[in-house]
Image (cartoon, rainbow, N blue to C red; front, side):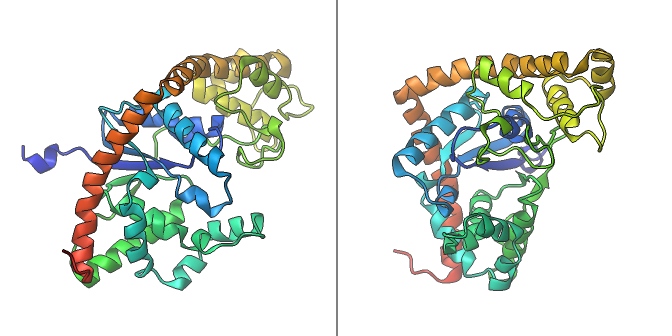
Amino acid sequence: MTQETQRKQRILSGIQPTGTFTLGNYIGAVRNWGVLQQEYECLYMVANLHALTVRQTPADLRQQTRQAAAMLLATGIDPKQSILFVQSHVPAHAELAWVLACNTQFGELSRMTQFKDKSAKHADNVNAGLFTYPALMAADILLYNADLVPVGADQKQHLELTRNVAQRFNNLYSPTFQLPEPYIPKTGARVMSLQEPEKKMSKSDTNANSYILMTDDADTILRKCKRAVTDSDGVVRSGEDKPGVTNLMSIYSALTGKDFASIEAEFQGQGYGVFKEAVAQSIIDVFSPIQQEYARILADKAYLDEVLQDGAQRAGRLAGRTLQKVYKKVGMLQL
């Protein structure tokens, strides 16, 4: 067997440190990250440069960056197996983003639906960073020659742009970048708002009852589940006509491993009260040990700093090699 066939495929994932992760972040992405380490070579990034497209309070952003790293460790990311780092600790991200922005067309960026959505949401701050965000995302991926990138529906368009820009660069300057493929997890439910089940669960929602945070205590989780929107039917079953109940079933299924048929049988004739309490308990059972580990890691500042310094050095070595190659190809004078 050659060394090349033995090489594990490389995955890059990033998450912004804009507030505490939600149940949606956990089920949709974060809980899979610890599992992926067994099969892939993984890089996990706290994407604090991306967070700047929206106005941030500096002290909060610093604290939330530490909290995001601690939460990722608490959910099972092993810094010896994977590389965990903060985006701004590796300057090559911003440096390659400029080169890629110069190889990305204005029209391509104009077509990005996320730019349109976020511009509408933050009409008072439609900045250039929000517009060129996909060039930075392309740099994140291409710096590490990632084979696979886990993407949600809202990021698929950005990954397609990354591939187009990489291909364009390769054609212009000779093969340089690996073309990344989307990684679609085998399981992963899309968690919707508890108050408006037609919308995705989001921590930026103005109604705190619409989302569950990974740091919410047991009483808060129970209260939010009890207040979750259902319907007047009183029957636990899934269906397009029952978005609230279907969402709660999806959450319960994701956390217990039970399929919809089993869940319907389990709560037959019991009404929503009993069902909502069971959903809450399944969340509490999963989050409680994570919360304890999170508190322990966050309290150990020296350990967390050591992990992030080591991650920055390891990521920096990989990124630096790619950036030097790119600079040489585009004609940057190197000393």
